[in-house]
Length: 179
Image 1 (cartoon, one colour):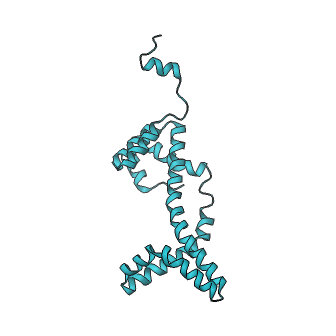
Image 2 (cartoon, helix red, strand yellow):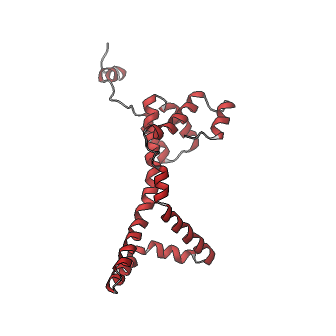
Image 3 (cartoon, one colour):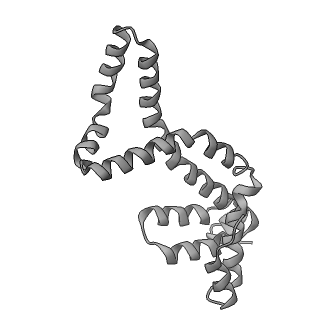
């Protein structure tokens, strides 16, 4: 787990209250304690071919200056990619057809996985922060950073209790039952 220099400076200068600093650190510790980051080096290794391919294609597109045409081809790959697979297979190159199919499937799944992984880590961190009781402090930090609908939803989820509320206490708080 790494702590940013900005967080250390904010804590040292008292720009953030100690409880908010603790909430940010607890959020970072959540995925680590859940064991979610143990496999990050393995994931980086196994996705290295995809990352290299993507980087080289981006560099070639920038160098050639045909970005709009390549972007259109990329968005419409679902139309012409199956044709490529069928033609290669019919021409007696089934391995190329299978390889093309694998690349096409990966081109749809890997970006989805890349977007889902940070969201998963955020949920693990939020869960840990709620469990240790620092959710209100983290909600304040998040509210200062952004005011999007997703931020408000996350703040709302942080404010939800981690366990079922005590029903008599809830009824008393709502003044439905007097003690």
